[in-house]
Amino acid sequence: MPSVYIKTYGCQMNERDSEAVAAQLVAKGYTLAPSEHVADVILLNTCSVRDLAEQKALNKMENLAADIRRSRPHVVLGFMGCMAQSRGHELIDRLPDVDLVVGTQKFHRTADYLDDIFAGRRDKVVEVEEEKGSEATIKEHLLHGRGDANGGHRLPLQVTAFVSIMQGCNQYCTFCIVPHTRGEERSRTIPDIVKECRELVSRGVKEVTLLGQIVTSYGRRRSPRPSLSPSDGDRLAKPVERFLPDRGSGVPIQDGKSPFVRLLEAVHEIAGLERIRFTSPHPRGYGDDLVEAYARLPKLCESAHLPVQSGSDRILKRMHRGYTRERYLGIIDKLRRVNPEMGITTDIIVGFPGETEADLAETLSLVREVGFDNAFVFKYSPRRDTPAAAMPDQVLQAVIEERHGRLLDLVNEIGKKKFQDCVGRRAQILVEGPSRKNPERDLRITRAGSFTLYGDPAIVNLEESNHE
Ligand code: SAH
Ligand code: F3S
Image (cartoon, rainbow, N blue to C red):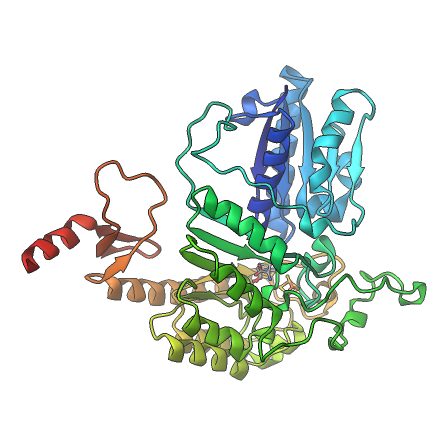
């Protein structure tokens, strides 16, 4: 059987999708190639969120194609993921050596498409249509360590796993391409997700991360909205139509709890599961029920990733984020009241169209006020068919670069101080690889970098023997 190599760009959702595709292919008898140089099939799982991510994947494919045309013409080349979805056939027009383009709702059919290509039934495959029910198809896992499906490679035992709970996003932030590449919000059912988590736990997983583009909207829409009438026209051309408030098409709040919190409770019940994380929530749907979940559900890790994007109300409004600075700070305040130690991270965009020095000053002051443990700072990148790309007051690239540098310096300075404060503390850790010598799990943090903490279990052991 042919061997496959998948290279992943972008977010955790993409990592999860790649893993599921790999698992499906392995189940069909394919092996996983250790590198692109020996693979019979090379798939690039792409990201469209910023232009840079698209360019990376395009350049990579160009280089692969040039190399493969020369030395290994039998190799099948394919694109999957968000850029495959948004560019479709255009990718093959541009790179004629590409054989396969698989959109975000067609991942689960990748093996069939490859079969068709290998059997000579189809020359090129471009599949980017919507598919009902596709949100429930990403559930195969390739857990390392246990199985023998690793192509002979013995990988470390996997104790953490990603679980996709929903697909798509209906928020239509004016800068964001995701609603176009991932489609309408569609949620899996609670029993389906719990079943997947249980299976993972039975295979040794201790921590799951529940994934969705906007998990706070989980389960609010029972099924995809009825398709738009023709008069609604092309949704890409008229995203403003989507800015109407959600008229409660979803599942009602029960006992003051949103469907997402009910999902957390159900997953929390699973015996043997030790930790739960999720990403990403949206401040707009971040209710008190979710804040309180941190107090009630001990398996929920004390960390929150809550994208803010900007500290300026004027910019937040132009971004169509659906909350104010005050509302955002209010959520952080409540989270800190539940647990003052809560780790808080965020995403910020600099140089959104119309951003002034005064707006940036608001963002800088919000960053200081919250004191994020870390923040992903992105330079605004115009995405096609998004309203922000057509806004007249685009910020000059040189200005974006300069603001990006200033914000990043502040974020790093605060993060470093936070980590420095951890030195000397004792913490529980999740060991991701097998420990050959030491069964102890706690360690004493001895040193801090900007993004890494270093610890020593030996010191904890020493303290304990001193106490005896
Ligand atoms: N809700 C999703 C967002 C996916 S995009 C999630 O958090 O999983 C991830 C981040 O990329 C966004 O939070 C935003 O900060 C950044 N981003 C999205 N579109 C962008 C653009 N056009 N330019 C720059 N950054 C962008
Ligand atoms: Fe994108 Fe905004 Fe949704 S950032 S993924 S449109 S919440």
